[in-house]
Every structure is written in C-alpha cells, then in structure tokens.
Length: 453
Image (cartoon, rainbow, N blue to C red):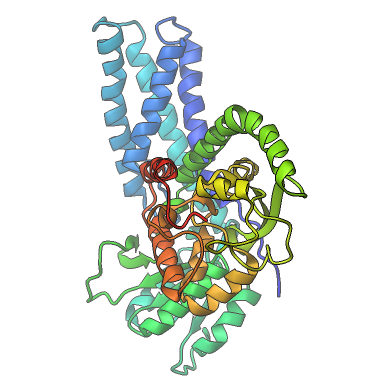
C-alpha cells in the first residue's frame, strides 16, 4: 500500500491571512504618520480586519468558488472595514479629519483586492498545470453525479483528478472501476483524497460504512443528492457550477482558525497551570507519595490520541505498583488505590500532569478522554461510531465527564453515552463551549463527584 502524499493546501489560508495583515501594516508604515503608525491604530486595524473576515467568511475560498463569490466577499469585507476604519477616528480622535485617511484606506483596499484576485487566478493556473490536485472517485452513478464528473473532466483548473466510478450495477463505461466492495482497497492503493457518494444509488447502511471508512483514513467524503430532493440545511451545501454537492464532514475543527484558537488557548492555559500550580505542587506531592508507597511520582501509560496514534499520558501516581494498571480501570473501593491517591482521584488532581501533554500537543484541555489501547479495541467492536472520537485531540476533561459519564464502565450504555456526547462535542464545538466545560469541571471538583474513584 502506497503512502499518502504530503498535502500543503492547509497552508494557503494562513498565508493569505498573513499577507493581508502585512499589507495593512506595510501601507501604514509607508505613510509613517504618527496618527496611523502607532500600536493602538495597528492593533485596532488588524483585529478589526480579522473579526470582519471571520464573520464574512472572507477566507472561505475553495477550488469550486466562482469569481462572482470572490467579488462579493471583497465588497462585503471592505464595506464593513471602511465603516470600522472611520469609526476609529470618531471614537479615538473625536471625529477630527486626519491627513492621509483616504490614501491609507484606498491603498489597503486596492492592494488586498489585487492580491486576492491575482492569487485566485494564479492558483487556478497552477492547478491547470497538474499541481495541487485532489484524486477523486464516485460511488454510484446517476444523472446528477454524471454532471459532477463532467465538471471534473472539463474544468482542469479546479484541480480534481477523476479516476472513475464504482457501482454494483455493472457497466461497460471506460471509467467503470468495479463494484462497491472493491472500492475500499482501490481508494487506499491509489491515494484517493475525496469520495463522492451518489445518494440515489447507495443505501443508508452503505453511506454509513463509507463515512466510517473515510474518517478512519482521513479521506474527505461528500454526498451528491438527487437534484429533485430537498435535504437538511445541517449539511454543508457546495455548488460546482449549478450542481449541488453536500459536504458530509462539515465540522468546526476543519476550519484552521478554530484549530488555531483552540491551540493558543491550550498553550496559554497550560503554561499558567504549570507555572503557578504544578511548580510548587509537584515537589510537595513527590514527598507525600514517596512516604505512602514505593514507586515514581508520575504514572505513565500509553493512550490513543488524534487519528488513533499512541502517546504517553502522564498522571500523578494514585495506586500502589501493580501489574494490572495497564489493563483494568480503577473500581469502587479498589485496594490498589492509596489513601493519598483516593484524594487525588476524588479531586481530579491526579490528572494535572496532563497539562504537559497539552503543551506537547498530544492532548487538548477539552476533548474526548483518551482510552487505553486494549479498551479502545474492545469499544470499537461494540460501538459503531467509536472511531469518530479520534478526529480530534483527546482532552483532560470533556462534555461526557461533566455530564456524569466518567470513571468505571459498568455497562455497555456507559460507554455508548460517552461516545454520543463526545461526538456531539466534536460536531458542535465552540470556544465558549470549552469555557463552559472547564468551569463546570472546576465546580464539580469542589462539589464532589460520585464516580471519582
């Protein structure tokens, strides 16, 4: 099986954001007027630009985005930015007309517009030459999906390489690749990047199976609906010319800015905990743990993280040394747990070293809890969508934990409810949801939790 080729498309949006900010700062620098070239104005301008861009989806430009959408984005962005630009002088300069106001604004608008349009067509030209492409296949074929494949073939500048289609209905068409059961191996061997499922030709069970397969192998999956049907607005609607395609994996964490926000918060929060809590708590606990039982202060265990990759998870040791620590979770009145360990587990203080895991990038502060590999394999057999938890980094705390699903798994419904809440978190993430979960976690520590043992 060949390895997936490296992709750098994810860098395009951050580069565009950086260039636009450099244009704003560069134009102001060239004018070098004290009314503009100062920390207050530069901070206001750049933050206001980013705020508008986030709300107008200014940087949400894809392969299939048309030129009309580009001009619409430019008009909306600059209209609001112009209002904010003059608001600065109304608020901070008491409405005084400052020299070079219009020169600064029009130069920024002109330079960013030129860059946006030139880069848009440059990328199309680059893709037309066979670079920055996506390998695609279609599962099932009807009149609507035929139109999509025609777009792939006719519009080379979109950067799609159409390999063919799979169908359980045999065909003599030259692009026919075989029946659906043969598609899994073919997709992996040929480094397919995107799968397009024809809804009118696939059963619900098949769509679920292909969605699970795509998530496991980090492949994008999209749905091609029957043009005569209406679908829920919860799907991400995309138009390839006038053909509707539904994005089946339109999740918050797909947006680079959301990943950036979450990572910055993780690093900042972890540093605060490490510097102001763990710096003095660690040596104190080292003495107390050593006094009660032999062994190291830190307990290390292999857990499954992002995309199922293994990492070493850290905890303050709360048990006596035993051979079952990597196989069996702690149970109520577990004889392995020390007196100090019981306190650490009840207050969740044993989890504090995981802030180092967060700093290293293996974990996040909020997310699905990481499981031991042995248990993860067992859960995958019983829970159909368990693997979807691996789409994000595991967390120190999570929605399932503050909802009462933590600790020992006594029955199958316990892990099912955890997975259900984990997937809800992944599909509905927001920065404020993370804050809410963190606050509730702290409150639960002081309130005490029945399953914290």
